[in-house]
Length: 327
Image (cartoon, rainbow, N blue to C red; front, side, top):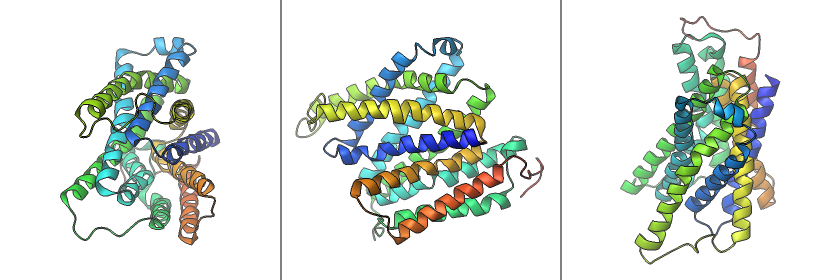
């Protein structure tokens, strides 16, 4: 279990870097940052594929189709719907929606595990209630420090933004559970090759998305091009961040997450996504040069307590429910 927890922590620390990018490159549109990241991920995967060529050669047609599905839903569709939610509804509410991921994933994974026979992957609901409540309370405490009051009149754009936020939540609820089940069904030793396969699957989709965005920005957007093509106003910084995110956050982060998904139950892995939230908070506080406030400190403490409680529920030797019982 320690190896799986360490892998999930490493993935969270790397994924937290993604939240720094809009601060470092504030003069770049978010969609362009996403395209650059996944183009870099795909190109790097082409080079890394040589080292995993034997494992990649063993992947079946069904495996590659699965890789495309995971890359499309977990990467591009997720980011597109999240960006749309922020544009239409503002930042705080979509952030709160996505912040519930650890709880939603854990509940969904536990429901599926119990429906398919339970065993070591499921846990009694009564034992999950406390850690999930702590995580949920911690997320709301952290985000309450920057969240604004909801608008008095919920406009059509605002409601549509909420819908996009829920779509993004659904995408990243489906992705880790589906990814975990695929890896655990195929045995050990595929974490690195599967991360590379997802990068290879992402590349053509990112290329098409990039061409589409270029056509829209230069040919269809009112007022002409809004972006200084091809690399923007600070090309060195943009390329450097894309390479860093493509290698560290996308490939290595995915590799570590695959390792954790193989070693740990999906319901526990879902809770460990909170490491990404904690890492993003750490980097944000370092960037702004300040300590967390009272509400933020309380939220962080609740998050850590919830993760520790979740680990305790799934530790080896912990009591498990009967497969046909109810909690």
